[in-house]
Image 1: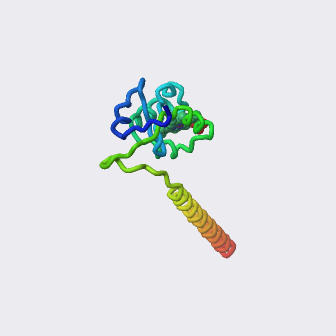
Image 2 (image 1 turned 30 degrees about the vertical axis):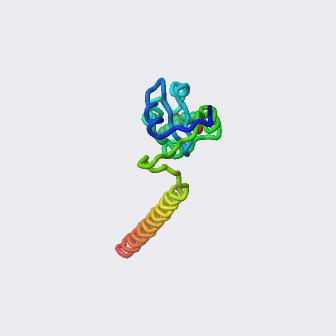
Image 3 (image 1 turned 90 degrees about the horizontal axis):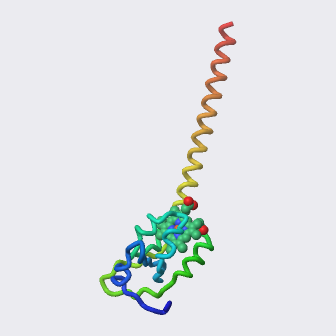
Length: 135
Ligand code: HEM
């Protein structure tokens, strides 16, 4: 059964709660029995029912346990036809890119706080000096 090939249009016919196929990494899974049990809620699963859920699935960073459950739901492979939506391959590089961006922003913020601190200290010293002059 897991060797069956489904075209994208066949998969898209299974988009209801009771009959919910999803595609992850070009494999077809029947998520119907799991919709109610999904810890992330049934909404998100139904949103991608009959569609390619690769990105959605990978973006969450599902655990190995989740991947095992997914493999248990396997019903076949996706057979891509001309004119089908492009495969949604997951590129971890973009995730690392985003992480690097956040990291450099973190450094920027740190520098800002540091400069602010130095300025505040300078101002404090200046005021102190002024005060001792006045006395
Ligand atoms: C049949 C496919 C799927 C399976 C077997 C599955 C399985 C699981 C499991 C076992 C968890 C618990 C945490 C973990 O072990 O990682 C989980 C959490 C979650 N899943 Fe899925 N999932 C599927 C598809 C999706 C999709 C397509 C989305 C779309 C966004 C999604 C969104 C989430 C979210 C947001 C959580 C976190 C819930 C929380 O921590 O409160 N899942 N999923």
